[in-house]
Image 1 (cartoon, helix red, strand yellow):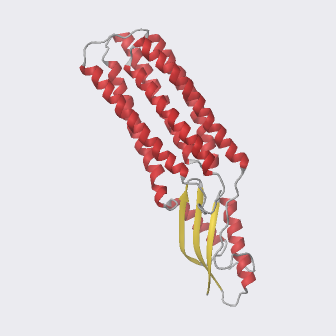
Image 2: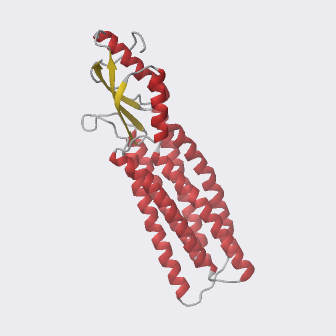
Image 3: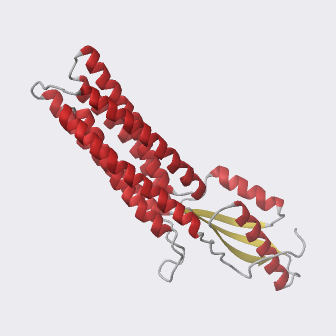
Length: 304
């Protein structure tokens, strides 16, 4: 065992250090998503109305859901990094998971509406499409804008471990694929003059949206019931504890938004002083905090 280093008495909680710069970065990035989605909705709605294309209208609805999701993400990242208080002693990290669940359900609702409208068009009276080139141009602009914004969101989400920003980035990445799909479908209509390809493409877009929303729902929901770290993460954590020569048992982990928690029982020789035990556990906390962001460690000390 490590000789004469740091530790909490029986159980000690290290509160994560909140960095205002990091929080501001998350908020600014969420705001970027709101602005881009607002502009794309206006473009898509305009193109959809003048062309009569249900696939373009479906993309406008998709972007509207993305905008609602971006607004939810914006407020959730502002709340999630506020310090713990008397009512929420473990912080507010899970608000990002709640945000992710709401966003996933919104996407599912949008996909259902798109399918309903596309089926109506397929089974209804013949329809005409106009200004198809305008629709193709708008879809390509949408794909480029969402690609750039989603890359930015993913980078900040990875740097800050934000599930809300990651969910928003997933929406926009899906929008890139659907916009390209709609553009390709409109291109085929120009070449073949087969009008029913338009609602068919809309249905394919909706199916892709449903698939992505289920992935997001799964990722956002499980941490709400105190899911442990992944097996790979726990394996690496055990390796770190062994390198520090920590004799322990009853290791438990959980995740709440971008916050991580560890509960562990550490065994220390009975002849060690309280001060030595305290220093040893402080060493464990300091070392783990260098490896994990927003970490809280609770250590219960037991005599050997």
